[in-house]
Length: 360
Image (cartoon, rainbow, N blue to C red):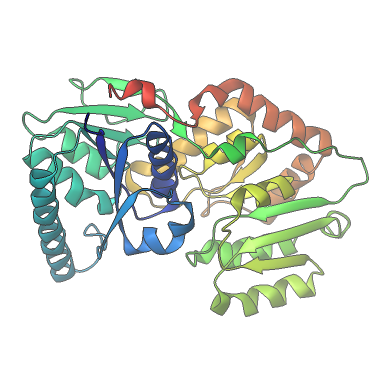
């Protein structure tokens, strides 16, 4: 009997890493291969419902070792090292045909184990600049590795490394989202998908900006916003005083359905922007003010150059500019045009698999 090919996929940390990993895992399972996915508790708890059935899930109790006090970093590195030993033993007992990493600190133990046991490794970079993990791994001597990227001109790639621009894996449901038939007098649905991690800007500043929109436009918007329960009272009070219709969610577990509802999406500039591209929706993008290599600003600029969607920076945004931009964007014909234009330009980078590049 021919042995089924065995693939290990490392992911975790956030949806930008975990969701595309799950998309590829499902595609590989559909080919009849065996799949093990490694993740951290955060990735497992938030995205357990999208991990494909049939995949073996290994959950690691990891936290980022790039932030925090020195002694905490040391402890976290030691814990990651212990998980690496576990994965080394696992790969010796059952050798994988390929190890695929979707980045984040949670992927480190699996990738390191793959390197130490001489596995073929694929790194997927979701952002427009090479991550800490991928930068470190690519410098390891005699590593057998391929680098896949979502963006065409990813920054920070060493000159001796070939970039394979395969695009970003996105759930098929986003590609099936239909354009909305809009009438001139229709209200506008705004989906705010960042903030579930208690971003101060999204909990406070953005709420005030929306409440400050001119009354005639403010009365036509309906908002669904991700926000933790303990952060809602102040935000709800601000919205209520401005008579803004809002519904809060702890987390959007049915994201494709929410995108179908939305006319405009307000989001961070992580890898999730590819889901916005796939859905042909228009976005207001607000990058994290401090991200590694400014990757969120670079991600946002890639989209902005294509379609003119709005980018706001937390430290420079004003009420006047916000109002002018929202007035311009909240136009039914404008919303449709921008979303379609984006997909026409980079829709080819939205994929439901990249199996053909894996040499399996």
